[in-house]
Image (tube, rainbow, N blue to C red; front, side, top):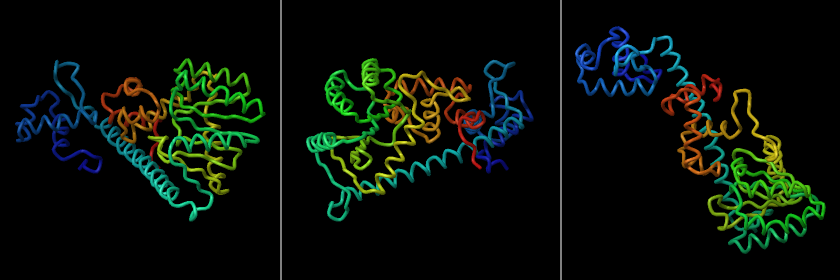
Length: 331
């Protein structure tokens, strides 16, 4: 009867029996249902995962079924969370497919794709960036998703940055929120701001990207290995879309000099992103990679969010996150 809500027949039978006989233990339930105790225990594990049973306040080590009105609300919320997560997975798959198509197209010979130039190797990439920087007239816009910079790379970048700003070039960069924990990076950004540079942070970024004068964009072929190669894009339609993407992210990003901004639910942008990534089924390691933080940090943040909702499992967290309004409900 409740299979449409995600509860299998055996677990439903145990749940109903616990409601009718709240003091029964595993042996008594197995006897009433004429089922092996091991099967009853498996059903209890399922019910616990769905938060349909809880520890008894009267019997040490005993379990009690939650009331049907609460239980059915949890099952309905679970379905809503799964539908919302499925929608997010579909959107992520669509974006991944679009990126794959774009990468495949970009790797074809440039002669058949006007507006696309392929760069192979780090030397070619750096030489091309240097050339484009020399030709800059108005502005440079950058997505820098690699996390905090080392003190050595910061010192190496300063003369280049200082030269651009002295020429009156508007310089806007979006880093990941995780750089807020890097003192050398924060000091560098403060120095950059004094010279007129603008820096904001976002919880995640779609790709590494540099746009020169809104007419040329450089994007790595692989975000995993930026040394492998890159493409230089100059098509008007492509640049219009990439500039719109940058402006959209820039508008929602926060100045690095400002404190952590929280929404009406008390969530920071990074926490909201972690909730969304958890709902997509990403592991702590995958989330850490997306946010440029350590796996330990990602695990700690996920655990803190679960504790805020009183969730004992990630599944229950998804259900409660929908109920709390942290995740969208399906329409």
